[in-house]
Amino acid sequence: MRPPRENQGNRARHAARSGARGQAADRAPSPFWDAAPADLEPDRLPEDNFSVQVAARHYVRPLLEELGDRVLGARGRLVLARGSVPAAWAQNVWLHPRWIPVASIGDAARQLTTVQRNWRAHVPLPGVEPGFRRRLALIGERLPHVAAHPLAFGDPVPAAPLGAFTLWREDLLLAAPRTTSPFADGELIFQENREDPPGRAYLKLWETFTLLGRFPRPGELCVDLGAAPGGWTWVLASIGCRVFSIDKAPLAPQVGGMPGVNHCIGSGFALDPRHAGRVDWLFSDMICYPERLLDVVLRWLEAGTCRNVVCTLKFQSETDHETARRFAAIPGGSLRHLSCNKHELTFVRLAPE
Ligand SMILES: C[S@@+](CC[C@H](N)C(=O)[O-])C[C@H]1O[C@@H](n2cnc3c(N)ncnc32)[C@H](O)[C@@H]1O
Figure 1: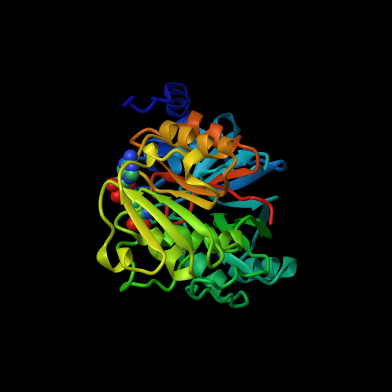
Figure 2: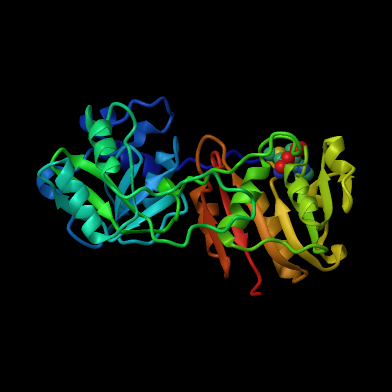
């Protein structure tokens, strides 16, 4: 197999941007902080046509690489970028953010509630600015309570708009009344099932269906490539789908024995879509190079026998942004980093209902 591509251009660009303040800005252990650009100069804060793209924990670097020349500055997981087009690596995007000078904690809470009811603070990781956590907590205490219970699978996402804010300086808020995710920092927390599914990979499908607001229907035929030990197959079979799963390894017995599950030991690359008949959903969580996965997905889409696709692009130490862009360019497709994803992106393409 080919080695993953180095993205030397982006690495050099971001290394050049890195400054002493940016390097020190976040001391959380992560291989990705070395890419952080310098903090913004206080007199050069952007005024308009920018957004705040929130990286997933530990994945600031791929977000910076993806945004490239759009990056204006960053602090911890918050990346200020030109324009408001969401990056795939952004778990949440603050739209039309504004700077709000504040005289006190009470004044900050007052100004935010004048704009709208629902706000969640983005709390920088330890070490960003001593004392900010405490001040943010005190502002939060003075705002109307926003419930944030762990979701049960099948619950709808909250409908009310959720604003996001942080303290940029002691006397300056950065705040956006609208964000792309209804969850603080785009982090979706479920009431987990620790008994039935093998492992925690099932959470990726729970999150995908919850965010889409769309679930496979009972009786639909699903192909699950790279299915073992069986978390995704378990989700699908629990909904009542028929699942044809493939992996080089067997499924956990409690999944392999579920009604509607038919497991085949083999390679997901060997299944020819022209011989598979009509499939409602194609899933893949196979460990493979994203380029190989792209070939598989294109083959299935070109065969025209598969209506919906959900798959995970898994990256090695470097992120293959070029292949990610090719996935994102598939008509009707979308690519995003789920809160359960590691160094991965989830691609979804749904047929119109
Ligand atoms: C991350 S695990 C999948 C977890 C699964 N989605 C779940 O929920 O339990 C990745 C799987 O890909 C499988 N795999 C890797 N290459 C494969 C191939 N060419 N064909 C089928 N499965 C493959 C591995 O055996 C492994 O079980």
